[in-house]
Length: 166
Image 1 (cartoon, rainbow, N blue to C red):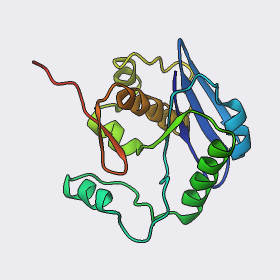
Image 2: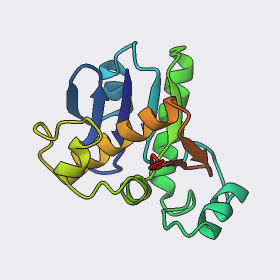
Image 3: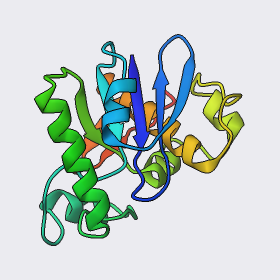
């Protein structure tokens, strides 16, 4: 089981859990997200930096060199603090879930997911998605799936590698 979370600094964050079916939950606090996260989730993709940093990391510089546009870890300090707090909570609760960082714009671009039909071509029903924040959380779950299958490049942000036609 995999999941993606679209963390927000204001308003509700969205958690998308992808198992046999897609479950999307709106939550206010990190503790609520932690409590809503099923124990079976092996990989959780978060839309925020999971490390402290000043300036661009080497991996983020490589990401830019590769031509990707994204929000660097220094862009939103409040979001970064929230993600670090969430990571700490997971560690304190000894959750085995692996945390990775994703960027919805990068996942969308790399996998050509620009709407419901494209998302469904990746085996994910869009019926339960009602807004852009939920769509981004689902993109996190899709990134987690690609990561779990060894189909991501790590630039500090996980970049899914689209399947190549042979």
